[in-house]
Image (cartoon, rainbow, N blue to C red; front, side, top):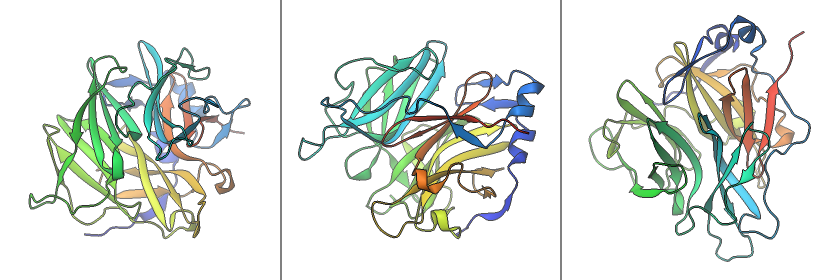
Length: 315
């Protein structure tokens, strides 16, 4: 079954039902009705961007792909992919930065926290006292890592994703793994060559089975994601799932990417936000993530720097 996005609906639905944010770990109550009134999907960059950037002359003189920001009781954490372009062939390594406010970041080390194998395009789910990282390894193969402190990571291995009949998915790249835990089951959303998005599920995180063997989401028909798409994040607000995606309609490299939202009631059928990109395409901002700071939503975009955006004030 191949499904394109259904007819767009206005994303005021998202804000109207934003009573609770369901993270992978727990529900966090939004502070109050005043916050609901100012919550908006229209974001503007803060002065002083980027809030985090590559370090010239260091192992992470360039950063790329999706990094991940997590706010918990211990503070703010940012995991990111860095590399040295003078090293050939380049190796993608994992770095960690921490912050007290999600704005001023400090590298936890002068060296990568994982540097012995390829790791990029990461996201992290915290369950209890454990961190689970979903990432791309070499050749865009989705990986699973596990940690008890967010610093020392054990590589579990390449994800075993199966077709609906139990056979392994065809060989080739499968990346931008995005995980969402709910009702005792793991949901894995992944892309293949940025040409479509699939959903697989697992109980034990050892074997994942496709919900459908055809992509649930395809590029287009809108111009800004007509060629390539990927899903970076899924959160739940009330009864609605909200996804942060990025896409491109650029025919030639270097492509211009943009960040936008979509909603779903079941993680299978998705409706694209009628407003389209959250920021102008010319800004080329991708790998977006929504983070609630306890008072309002923040939008972070990454690759090849981390920019912070806050909701615009409504007239």
